[in-house]
Length: 475
Image 1 (tube, helix red, strand yellow):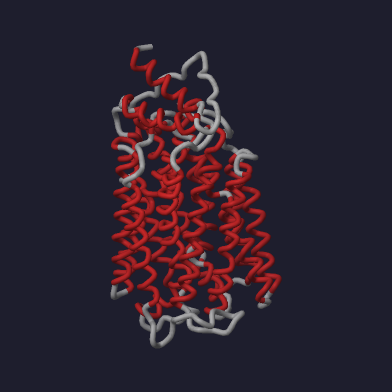
Image 2 (tube, rainbow, N blue to C red; image 1 turned 45 degrees about the vertical axis):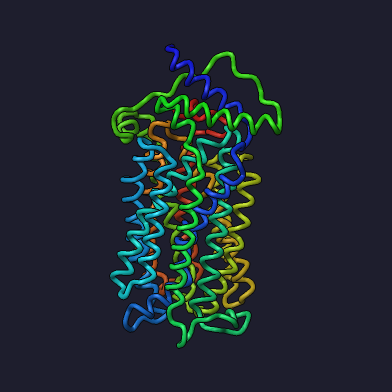
């Protein structure tokens, strides 16, 4: 082992012995605000699209809007795939922090463009552009968190940031309810909602708010340090040492650090070729990629059918738009609760065990909505259960996907499985959304939730990673 390898191994050992999140809380807030905007942008189309469709598509009605939501969602997800496969690998070669700035700028520009479009075609194009930034951002953020979190807390701290995602979803849907649905007496809607003949452009305001959130996220991300694991893998040991020393000092101020191991971990391998080659030339990583891609593809059919189309789904099932919007808005509180549950208990089970639990909860919520008929309070409770179920496994699966790849190709690996997997969301919107009016409520929810159950089955063939060192899981 050379002196450089010895120094790299020592830095990894020092980093791995830190048992808690030791960077300033401000950094968690900075990352969280970026995630808040990202999920605000994903969910803001949910309630607002009915008004968007009526403004941009001649003859569009609430009942017909379901036929038009599939294309913008599909191309947004196609943009997502482009962003993950083109920009995310750059983070493995150029660094996590700089690309986090680029991706947030792109996403903010896309949101601003969406606010000023004048036709359905340009709306679809703007959503595709926005997807490029969102896809790369999610891949890099999850990699960044996974590389900074301790071995026993990667799912926990990914879930901590995911709480901001839930808040972004709540903001996107409740603002949509306020800005894009007509005033309706409680409990069928919001009596103080603003949409109507005098305010047809609430959906534009929503995307402008998203652009403003992105600007705040960009300014705050300048405060972030580079990932020390990436710096070590690149041989930039002096810079990595400064970050690790700062983390150690903060940790030591709270609790004594455990001793270093007698045997240092090996230095990470450097990859001179593109990160894709580190994955596809290795049978282990090829097999992991196949499994995770299938899992995410199937699961995202469920996730995006509900995340982007829950209101449209209810409208197609003959719920009045204000009532459908209110049910969806109330359902987002289940999203917030699931993020908290994942943060508190995410490390209690192996990653792959969470997906079948999530599928059962999602199906149970859908059955409750179906059995409740037009009973509002049952539909609200069912919606909360559905939103809890189809989201609770996500941050834990994010952490799991990051753990399945080595530092030299970690962002690229996550981008591959999550990015290609997102095409499942588009397929779901295109293939399933037109079927909804012809299905009963029970059949619709069982069909959509069933894909998450299939994803759960696939996940059971994956590896165990809980509380293990990243470099032991993926050398």
